[in-house]
Length: 279
Image 1 (cartoon, rainbow, N blue to C red):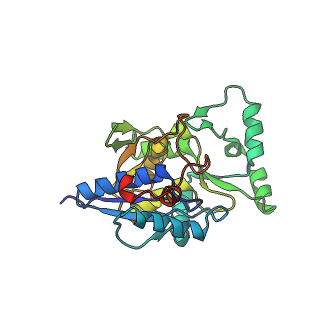
Image 2: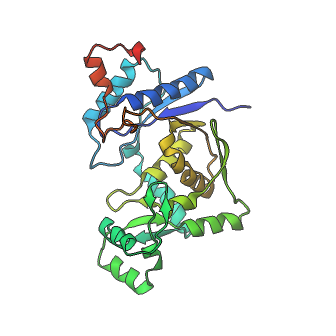
Image 3: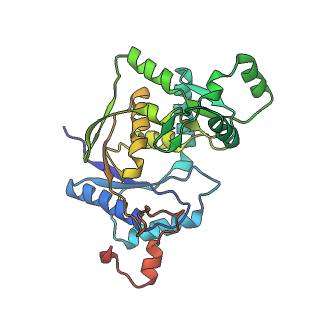
C-alpha cells in the first residue's frame, strides 16, 4: 500500500518570511495538492539566541494570508529537545561522535596555517583537530568544564555502514534522479552546538522521521545538506524521504533572496496592496 504523501514547510523564526519563502511554500503546497497529500508546518526554533515569538506570529499570519491550507498542529523544534538528545545518545553509543573544543577563531587559524585545507560546498571543512586529541588532554578539558560541541566522525560512520553492508548510499531527487550520497564533502559536521544541544542537521533528520515526511521540498541551496542527512538516516535506520530541490529566486544581482540580505518580505508586499493571488 502506498504511503500518503506528507511534506512540510519549515521556516526559522529569525525574521519575517520573504518572497523566496513564499516560492518554496507554494511549491510544497502544489506537490501536496497534486497528490492529495498533506502539508505540515514546522517551526525550526532551536536557536534560542535568534528566534523570536513575534516572528512565529508573523510567519503563521503570512501562511494563512497566502491562502495555504496546512494540516495538523504546529511542530516546534524547541519542544522536542529531549528527542534530539536521545538520538544523539544513540550515535554516541555507536562510537560515532567526538567532542570538539575548538572555537571559530581556532578553526580559522588552523585552516589559515594549513597547506591544502579541504574544501566543501560551503567553504573550508573542519580539519578534524579534536579528533586527534590525546586521552589526557580530553580528560583535562572535560574536568575543567571547557565547553564543547559534538561532531559526527564521518570516517567512522562510513566504516560502520560498510561493515553492515549498507554502503554506498543513495537518495532520490525528483529533479536530479538517483544521487549517490557524498557526506565526506561536508566533513565532520556538528551534531550538537556548545550552546544548543542539537543542530540543524540532526534536528531536521529526526523531525522528518518523526513526522513521517515522505517528500522534502526545499531550495537547491540545501541540496548538499541532503548528503549528510542521508548518512544520518542510514545510521539511525530511518527511511529516507523523496526530495525536490527547486531553483532559487534571485535578485537582479543574481543573489538568492534571504533574510540576511534584506529580501523583500511578504508583509512589505501586502502593505503595498498586493493580493495573495499575485504571488
